[in-house]
Amino acid sequence: MAHAAPHHDYHLVDPSPYPLISSITVTVMMIGAVVWMKGLFGLPEGTSWLFVAGLVGTLYAMGAWWWDVIREGQKGDHTPVVSIGLRYGMTLFIASEIMFFAAFFWMFFEMALFNEARTNIPEISSWAETAAAWSTWPPRGIETLDAWQLPLLNTVILLLSGTTVTWAHHALQVGDRNGARLGLIITVALGVLFTGVQAYEYYHIIHENLFFNEEAAGSGLYGSIFFMATGFHGFHVLVGTIFLAVCLIRLLAGQLRPEKHFGFEAAAWYWHFVDVVWLFLFAFVYVTFG
Image (cartoon, rainbow, N blue to C red; front, side, top):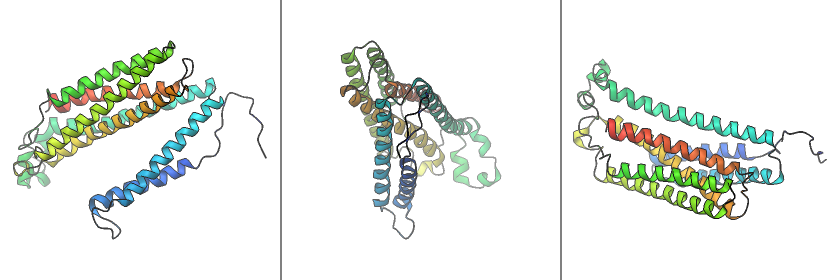
């Protein structure tokens, strides 16, 4: 039996299979990543099909779930009260992301400031290579990157993208669709460029064995922290680029209006968050302790 339309400002979403589907596919993808890297369940190392299957399923669930949200907005289900809830939800999501990166910075600062104390721990000091590597920070044998080359280039790219996404948002607010379209195109292009520069940077690190060599034996923690912090940030840039690309497609399709465009507004918030995190990474990982 069909339900009557509710006479209130609160929208109750229809039952959706995508929360359960995405949970399953993400689990499969993570298990597949372990199998790919280390082997598991009798599957040899290098087996990638399980990871790929989980990734495809996750992307499908994400796309279908978000399309449902877009259709809800087009039907008028996103009342002013619901819109406030969406804003609170995005704000809390970004707050959780701040704590996510705070954990990586905490770990990096703890090692950068108190690395010598680590060498006095009996369990570590008995490991001669590790104690010698951690006697300085960056650890002995690590060849750090020049902060004023590729990292500075990526900093300029992200700061410029922050201005173009703000331009696009303002243009949409005042009804300048051409300006909004051009600003979004430039922002997406800059996001792709940032990812390309970071990929080249990683290739250089690995190809030149800057973090992994005989002289740097026992210093693997530096590389772990570096790749975890900058790599997850790079992943966020990739997600933000996709987010903005979807907004661009919706803008071209006429779905974003000056009075109603929270999807784009949320993407802009997310992009500015990514910009700020990179400034901290550049200042501390590359410059201060690099």
